[in-house]
Length: 380
Image 1 (cartoon, helix red, strand yellow):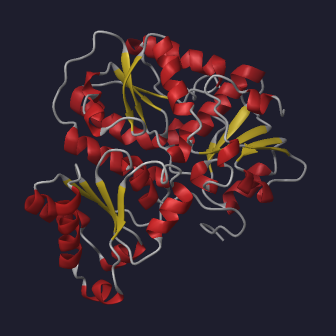
Image 2 (tube, one colour):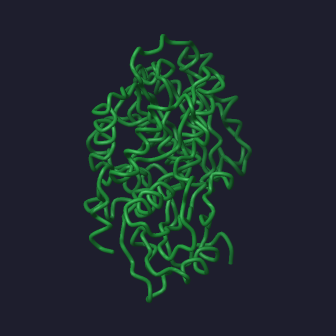
Image 3 (cartoon, rainbow, N blue to C red):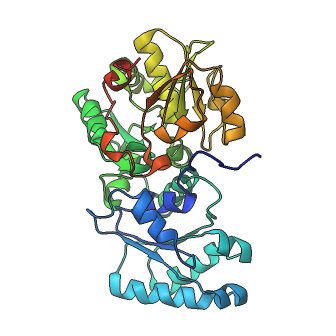
């Protein structure tokens, strides 16, 4: 049966992706739902919950409100909360119930913005897509609301990191490590969308020389910044010494970009080693492993992704019925431990926890592989 998870877990939903993308920026995120989505987000999807203050709320829509479509109560509740909390913006995200009753999130956001003077945007998520889509639409909406004016370019080579949340990068120092490596190579990091920087820092994004899209969730904002400010972008996540060095060289030669998808070029074929995960992370890890080992590695992408960005052997497999036939041919599989039950027993399984798939279960053993793949190489 397609689109059904009988054995393995499912990826974090789009509504949690919205909250994760906006968590550190001083805004108020409202999940329009009856009950449950907020606790799912803070207990499974958000490792920063107990260490950071953030305004993430649930609307608590009742059965009668859902039947009668009482948007006015939602609007007044949000307005009342803004009077007490003074957020920098308001984001309203949806779940299955608002989807079924046809809630107009953009209209609700427009009313709130007019009545409060606080920037607001409505995001018609529905819980049926992965966190990748939620982060993507949240970052694009944020950019369109706050990054609208040109900023003087930096004199030195500089980048923005796009698509960074703990759902892909965890909290294991990998984000800080990535920034340090770039800056040690004379590449200034202007802003990180959206982990480690505030809203004011993100507004300086147009001053950068180019954008580095480190997860597929950052591609939509990269395309907006390219259209609005003519900013080029590269797509890759730093993994291992060789691939990270290659990314740095491509950044330094950004004026001659031929193919922005850095993990797509010169890939080997007929792979017996497979990585599973988010598109940019999985593709970048496969490319990095090929550079380190000289052996072909196939990337299998289980979240939203573009077919045109795949390397020759790579594939998109969104559910068990698609994954199982692919995995039968593998000799080595690198994936979140919750994938192991559908992997062939004949294949060597190397566990690589992913916060967006297994939540906090394996958080303490998620490695930082920004400039070293020893975690995997030592297990091959």
